[in-house]
Image (cartoon, helix red, strand yellow):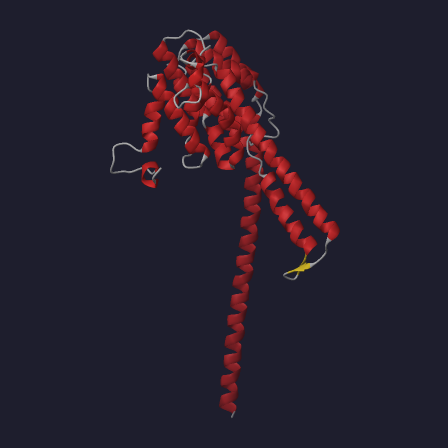
Length: 336
């Protein structure tokens, strides 16, 4: 595919990516299946990175009605066949998640557009159940695939550490003035810094996306869909102590807004209250972190003030000393 087709062209009315999104939302199954296969291949090749495309692929992958529309098993190898697409996508998601960190992040980010796509699908079909698009199962699959990719990355990191330890045992050479032990230690230390900046868990990120959706679109979404999403939130297990406090505060804020948006529905409010109870101490944790941070900033400002004061005194002392020397030299000149 030519580069210009994939790039967004401001002069044209539609980009190639926009055309794919329109085809994925088409009413004809053949067009949808063909567009899905093209999207999967471009995403896996790294030519496109769009959570919206991934969200559509997830919706299509879990759409049980597509397989029912498959005409003939003899045409499984042909492009546009739903059965062929199912085989491709079943391999696509785990492979894509493990291909790069950006790809894994894009898969995680697909939860947000996925919720809106399923809502539109339910409204268009006048469905009364989630059997065709099992949202809880889809989100669980996303988190599982993301976690599986993270696990593989951690295993690769451990293998790198073991390899570094093996080098320490077998060699002790000098590299640019440093021993090999020091070089390897610095390399592993940099990796430790990367690992220490642990990203939020997939469960927390998915929960934030769901809570945000409920806060903004909960009052306009089908009641059974809202209840299903609220039930997902009530069943999540979040390690409050291990997660980022800022993200936990964000989740709590969205859940509170969602409670206000859907307060007329009893089961939904009950499930939202359950997760709010689990997040009851989040603001206190955030407040403690801010107090520590502000205290450290005050200490730094005081230290900087003392340094500036000392530098000012040194400057005045140097100036006074220079004037004294000048005066002495003048006096000596007069004597001579």
